[in-house]
Image 1: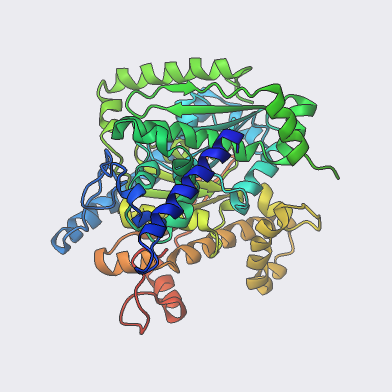
Image 2: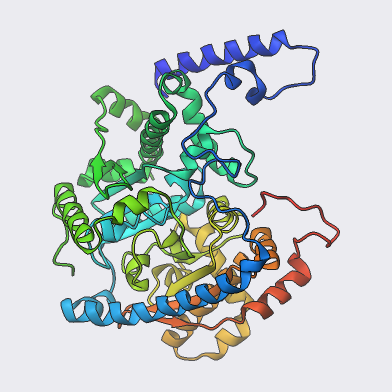
Length: 283
Length: 227
């Protein structure tokens, strides 16, 4: 975290503990019930009575619909397998060497760290083919420093496959981001979304100045930057940047237009130096 | 390999623009519809391997399949990452099908059959060794190494399916809605075709619920947000 970030954080904590002091004597309160937090606009673009982050949340289907839904979806499933046959035939026609080559191994140039959102189909939106993009997608493209799943993906892609580009891609209308802008309890999703709330906390003043739409958009961007931060805290990544020019990119995908936009993520020499000192380890 | 391999990140943006134009020609309102929200019928849990892109192998468009991909399509019980995905897809998107898709020639599965220390990857890949241990008798009987490896790919998919079914989200949704149904597939890189392993979902669910029952009435309190 930057020095400014640290200062802001300690100021916030001081104010938070002040607020907590004023209400001392009552039941211990969590931060979320402090006056500071409730002053935050709670309306999110996705807020409904249902889980606030789900833009098109459908209430539990009434039982009367179950049968028709079930038979429809069975058809869709069969259709999926049918479509695969069409795709395999078409791809083999258009790229006769592709499948025989793929069977021998992969040499992707890109590692894609993106959101699970169905609208963010990476290989399609990049106009690329099987074999081009190594992919990890999770809820809200969050990278926890200690997460073994994304950690294993990054290690394998950078060290063993020697990809040339690492891309973190966030997107507009992200359900996870909307959830982190709200205050609804979501069970197991809460610990997963925690890094997003940490980013929100560190940027609370900035976010509060914006309209709910703009604030969500801003948090999408801040979240991408935070995930990039975690990527470049990994020694294996720093080593590849130094030794073979691995490039790290932050992108935002606009689900409403299909267009990708690259963020300026360049760091000062000083920041890069500090990063290397703090995170680069050697065998 | 691909003739469209980008030489630089700039080429990616060119490709992206071309894709956008193609989609708009096919359906001028394509992106407007997506902007309104997502209603995917499928959750796809697959391998990070670049040769197995979810939408392409299923012939589906953007917006049709919610995707989680990790090394060797594992669903470890305590992995918050995949558990969050399953929870969100089942409880909030109401997906109708969950597909666990493995693939032959999987580097992760191969690594797990090799006596190598892969550092950070060890604990992740150890899950695959556990799958081997669970099916040791069957696998040891297969003499041909390639066939044994392929069978481990399939068994790894089946165990991932089982782990998906262990979740409260899946058990409760299936009890209430009769979905999602869990499927196990294997993708064959040599011909681009998907093979359905035809796991018996109903039986597997019943079997799993003997021990992993997480619906109310089992004597345990229901955790509404559980995975």
